[in-house]
Length: 91
Image 1 (spheres, rainbow, N blue to C red):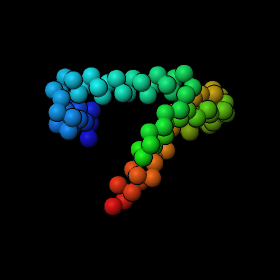
Image 2 (tube, rainbow, N blue to C red):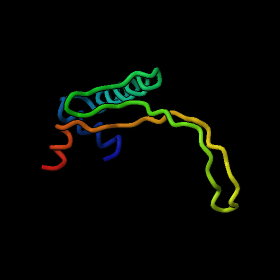
Image 3 (cartoon, rainbow, N blue to C red):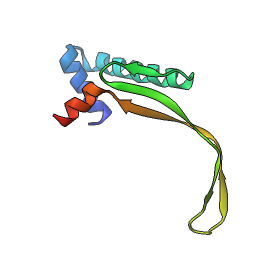
Image 4 (cartoon, helix red, strand yellow):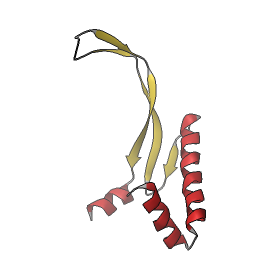
C-alpha cells in the first residue's frame, strides 16, 4: 500500500474527501516526524512506538578498495509494533 492508497482508505473509513484525508495523513506524519526530531517518542496504544535510536561513530571497510572509512554518529528512527498490531498481522 502506498500513500495514495492509504489516503483513499482513510477517506472511505472516515467519510472524508480525499483532499481532507490527505491533509489528515500528512498532518499525522508531520507530527510524528516533528516529535522524533525534537527527541520525543510517539506511543500509539495498540499500534506501536516510534523512537529515535542513536548510532555511535564507527569505522567500516569499503568493499571495493578495502580502505577503512569513518562512519559518523547518527540518529535513526525506529518502530516497535504493539501487541494488537502483531495479533492483527498474525491472525
